[in-house]
Length: 112
View (tube, rainbow, N blue to C red):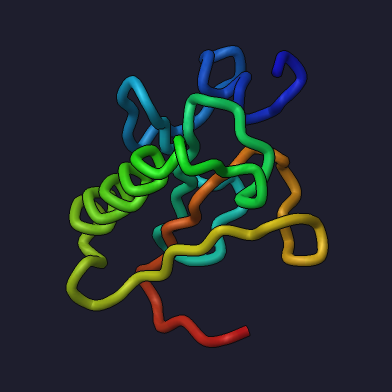
């Protein structure tokens, strides 16, 4: 999608602080971090929300969680603790409609 903010970041049309990338996903630091570590992992394939994931996307979703583990380890939060979360639709806090997995850590997290 040409107008999608995260698709444009993936194509390097917009700047970002890259945390990880490969042929399937790209990850970058959130511009409004909620903790010292706050990275977004996005598939290169445009999927609007978790509701749009199909059975064929299963390996891609698993890969996103594998990347989350790597980012947590590289950031030094893998042993102390971190959170992964998908926000699905506006009422849950999704503001960019391109699937993205938040990796959040580096401080004690509470709910909500």
